[in-house]
Amino acid sequence: MNGLKLTGISRSFGNRRVLHDVDLAVHRGEIVGFIGGNGAGKTTTMRVILGLLTPDHGEVTWEDLPITAKDRRRIGYMPEERGLYPQMPVRDQIIHFALLEGHQPDAARVVADELIASLGLQGREQALVQDLSLGNQQRVQLAVALVGDPALLVLDEPFSGLDPIAVETMSRLIREQADRGVGVLFSSHQLELVERLCDKVCILDRGRVTASGSVVELQDDGKSRWRLGFSRAADSFAAEASMTRGINVEFSASDRTTVLVSVDGSGRDVPGEILAAAQRHGGLKSIVSAQRSLADLLAGKFILPDPGITPGAERSLDKVGVSQ
Image 1 (tube, rainbow, N blue to C red):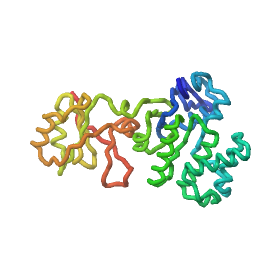
Image 2 (tube, helix red, strand yellow):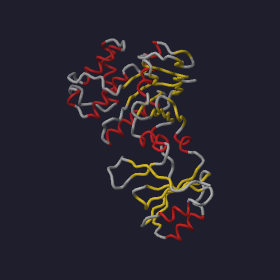
Image 3 (tube, rainbow, N blue to C red):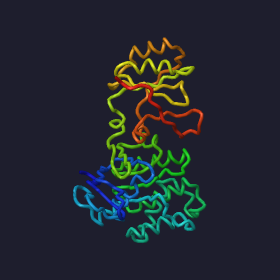
Image 4 (cartoon, rainbow, N blue to C red):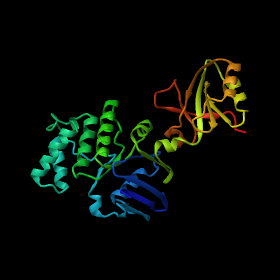
């Protein structure tokens, strides 16, 4: 395999096992999103990749061979707890880490200047890191991860705390690295960003991989779904529709006007009996295709946004009917 592979990785701390037979692969030029709730084991897995922790069982390979300390020198790492010197100027900071990577002084300065130019940090060379915006601090942190010309980037929450413009900038920089043939593994709680940016996704839950594959593969579970919006409570429509064989109906408990209808089979049209039921009960305003999201996979059920709460917050759906 061309790149990194984890096979059957397990790790315990005392009597508590935090990783259970984890399999994970990151090819060169591929962006892999690593997602899961707090405490799922993502950071522990990253530390195993970096050699900071030794697995109790399993194997880590690079280019189909057991990974070595030399191989790990080709991994660029961005920790969630940023590892920068806040009172050191940007250019001096990058030079310092380039020297630690084994560059000679003249070469370290060349590397620093190239990274400053490529990451859009011109004009901030002498600024102290603590005086930069969070987005620019992240750029410096990425520069530090890149000083060793890595073949693999391991990024722990690289988008944490960034505003939308900084998120787009960081996304572009990560994609540029992948386009150069660098493998990228990053964790994030921003699931819409993971869906948009990643070639593959690995979902971890309490130390176990629950799903892995491309976003399209994970979203396609053999069902077609539509979100129906009504101008009034849709309880009577939901009750009738849920009695139809092969059709499942769910809706938000506190917003009885939004209904999610799912039918076995990918890419199907809205069933005629659903449209007929909606017409009989009246008040139908909209029908929108509702593709399964990564949030659905994490929660094990469908999640609909609540227009009455802060954007990004979510509420779960209550089932109204069971397919017969």
